[in-house]
Length: 355
Image (cartoon, rainbow, N blue to C red; front, top):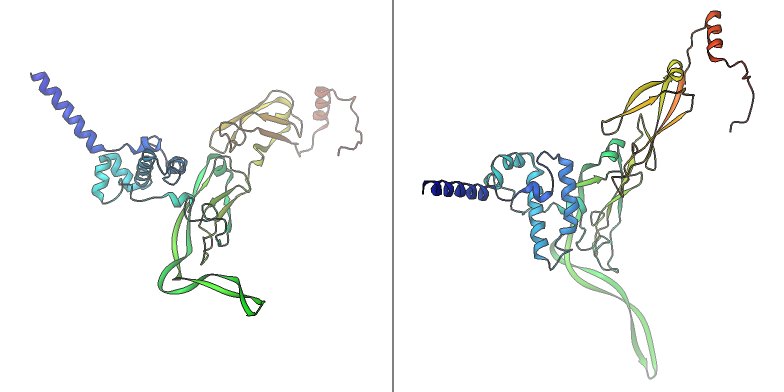
């Protein structure tokens, strides 16, 4: 009986603890408990687009998952709420006065009005549309290699309904008027509808622009409905065009990376070993046991840029060697020693077209 009571106490404590903890937000997002901010944002963005209710209008399970996903992101993307959640679970966050309820939808911060009333994505074909806005987003090669999120704070002009009415949807129509027996006249008239009056206001908006792993120069992220407004239609789109800043160590061509290494004449003749710091912090070992001539190239497989289509696939790292010759004058004895070592008396200077 005593053993049974103890078992019941343990089971009760487990159930209480389970109820208090609530949902596992890390599991919902599919990230580890030590995930950084970028990993959390990437996990949310990946799932939110597929689970959004407008994409799954008759799927209650998908809608419930989307609400859980939004709640998980709201908590884990906030440092204070995340710290509270890690200590006391969802109940602790609720006592803070926010989070965990799925009330906040961060979807538009990542996609704009992706499923909303237009923006060139969901509106009718004949609906007028505001101008698109294109912005160059300069990122480092490290950010393109590892993936990154850039937070953009933007003031957005929007039309808001106000008092009164206005003429809208104006168009010209042809009318026919009888002038007499067998005589008709056609003429054009302007016809307008009556719509609620609107005024232009400024709204502050925070957008999360993802620099995808392997993103290349010119890659564009589109936020639908975040461009210029249209008084009688849908707003245009906001487009961020990726611009890769010049890197001091690497040059990118497609998915391949190029770098130059300068070695001494001594190392060129005797061989050498060195390491190159890569874009994610790991070291790439470079070793040459043979003679290395100026312009020689070494290819390192899978040490280039990751492909944006398949992050597991990477290009080459191509290392080109430059040889730094000594600038000091050699003595006659040293020159004789070099001649004896190299044994190149048979090679004479010759001119040729090397282009």
